[in-house]
Amino acid sequence: MEAIPPAPPRILIVDDDDSVRDVISVLLREEGYNCVVASGAEMALDVAGEEDTPLVISDMKMPGKDGLWLLENLRERLPDTSVIMLTGYGDTESAVDCLRRGAVDYLLKPPKLTDLIRAIERALAKRRIEMARKRYQKKLERKVRDRTAELRNALRDIANTYQNTLLALVAALDAREHETSDHSQRVVSYTSAIANRMGIQGKELEEIGRGALLHDIGKIGVPDAVLLKPGKLTPDEWMEMRKHPEIGFQMIQNIPFLDTPASIVLSHQERWDGAGYPRNLQRHEIHIGARIFAVADTLDAMTSDRPYRKGTSFANAIQEIRRCANTQFDPEVVRAFLDIGEEGLIRIKEEMKLKKGLPQAELEATEAEAELARLTDLDDDSDAPSPAGRPAATEGVEAKDVVKRSATGSEG
Ligand SMILES: [Fe+2]
Image (spheres, rainbow, N blue to C red):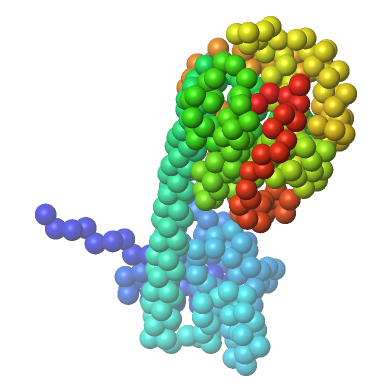
């Protein structure tokens, strides 16, 4: 079967002079072009819009709207249509003006047939290249869009897996201490609520939440005999126990995602008055995330039931935390904590219970969404951990204040 030759390109001839219009169109038809004609600029705009018209050859000077008007309107409405202008002898200035405004060529009137055909072929070839370039660009853009979508999905998967790995690790740690992972997740919720109340948002809020989640990760390095000992710890055993912030820090400090959480892990047992450990940091030397965590952890420790005692009321816990502002806790953090109020704190605990009842897939989707938002945000945010949040070097664990632990605080 023979291939059907492509239809000749449609060329629109525009001239108010019938004779010029007819001569050009007859000659071009004889050369095999598909010609249509218009006697004025406005009519030409309509005819060109009727079907695909790769090329318009237009007279410059016409009564009413002239060739320049047509050129400008074609550029705007049919940008894929090329325009060749026919100008009178000596009108070089307008010819140059036409080119500046987007005409592909100009010819002096009356044009020689060979010049005209050469100009037509040049214009059509140029247009073919331009169209091919546009198609290629569109294809590229589509590809970039597809790849971006794929990348977003991959990031979502990574974020999901990453978050679930951390949750599994924390659940395993909590299980070792015969606790459920609710404790860690409740502490994250309280910590995030206080941080939020203090105006902390976005990436910083996420990182503080993650620090709270991982705070006791170093307990993996504390022997069972110490960690699970039912009775009181001896001074030596306390020394072992008090290594856990340092161990946790060493474990995660080189993971780029966990840079800020690592600072919080290291300082989560410090106290506002400097009586904490491992570095006896005080006041603003302690990472803000760790100062917030200390309040959240104490609240959860006091209000949760333990095998050997029943949890106290939120009202009692709040009163105790208020009492320890300026000694154990940062007073500014305590203020934000008190702002949330008893009802607000109880609501957080209730919401955690509800969240636990949600299907896992739904939870994962919510968490992955948050993680994705954080990852796509990474370029914009440049908040480095505060100088106080990061130790200059590994310090030894001091053994002196083994019994300075608050009566209210947990060893969490
Ligand atoms: Fe701890």
